[in-house]
Image 1 (spheres, rainbow, N blue to C red):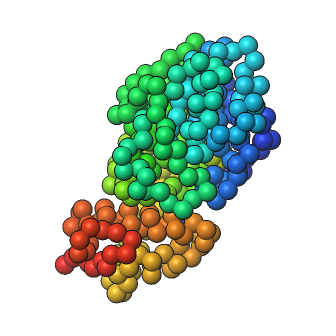
Image 2: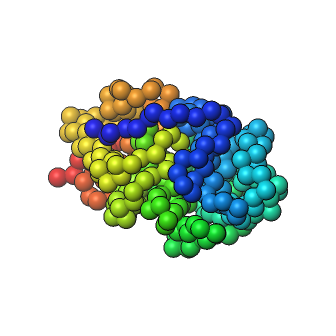
Image 3: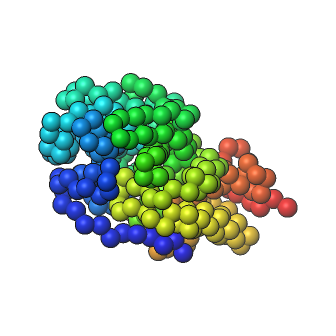
Length: 298
């Protein structure tokens, strides 16, 4: 079982000091994919970085600016192009002049569009590319490293705050829920590799864009990994019982999940199928898709 953390106290639009270097402002955009809303993080004092400005809500832009009177935004950092993360980056840049850092949307992103409330910001194009990760971004008293974490999306970037051994994990790892992996832009093989990469870094705290922080980091990530492997085993078990179509499996495998999330869950099962086909455990005729017939190999 994943030891979810879901308790969080805040007021929409208020700025809360959540650690010595980190402030948070939560947007009023709750939903099945955003939990209680998008948490925009402000790092540093005087000269600050803003992480995941969030949805294009004028009142959220006003709240971010009200949180930093007399301060300068030097970096706007975006974890990925979904509409609850990146659209406000442009308006925030227009108000502050700060460049936008992130990884541009890939050509296949539109094909991954799930029926979600969050949606996608297909026009997202940063001023400074962080694709591939490894870049170091700095301000007075803070140092951030971009870490490429493809899987949820092909352009997902996490940001490590050196001074607090903390990670802004975007949607890669969330305390309140698992993460949607929707092919072809989402990739289960890459996602599992990215989870292992972050686990190996042994961060003290994860700050997801939605929900509260994760403070028991290594066991939490291991539980995330174990959950995916258990889901994979369930998929293989369903195939062994003769259920060869994804749409037959989802209501059974995700019986405990809000039915509004079942279309996204079907995409995650597809991600598992593509990964299993790559590894030679499952076969299908033609390209793996939602409506394909799958069978075990061997």
